Image (cartoon, rainbow, N blue to C red; front, side):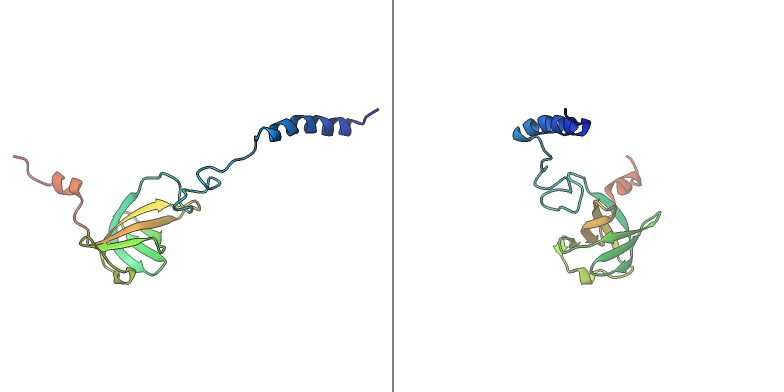
Length: 136
């Protein structure tokens, strides 16, 4: 006579072996285990970039602090972060306190905000410029 435990083990083996033989197991998604996109594994996949506008309060090689209209935002920077002024690439060291910037960013998996593009002295927002224009 078999014990209840041995019956349970036998039932599990009978249920699991066919599933494993058919290839039913956790699979990788998009080249990673759901931890982001293949090109940038630290960010959420397919997230559109958000744009933040403000004045630089602090700048360093891995962190950029920008004072927006409502709050200060800390941006993580990486070697993939690009910096531009008047459409030309510039070095991160050219970002100084007091500069007006537009930062295009994404959220990382751990909840931080990653700067993708930093635009120094950006043109005014189109919506704000057209809202103040007199109509004819």
